[in-house]
Length: 77
Image (cartoon, rainbow, N blue to C red; front, side, top):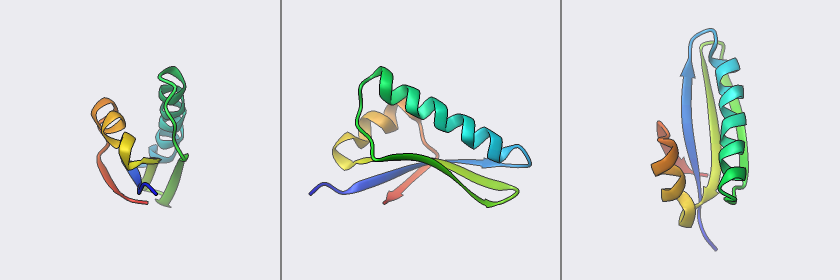
């Protein structure tokens, strides 16, 4: 069983939530254009000044996503 990796983009400031939601749209478009598998694309608001957008992928595909999309950070999902 392959490990799952969560690639994360941080958005800060009062427009962070809207920006993170919009970023999720682009993440989904990227996967459709290149026909890439993923487990989840979503966003999470920690507080009004910090929201993340993320995609969860198999570790075997992580480098494709990382190199093309330049996430701010990643962690095991």
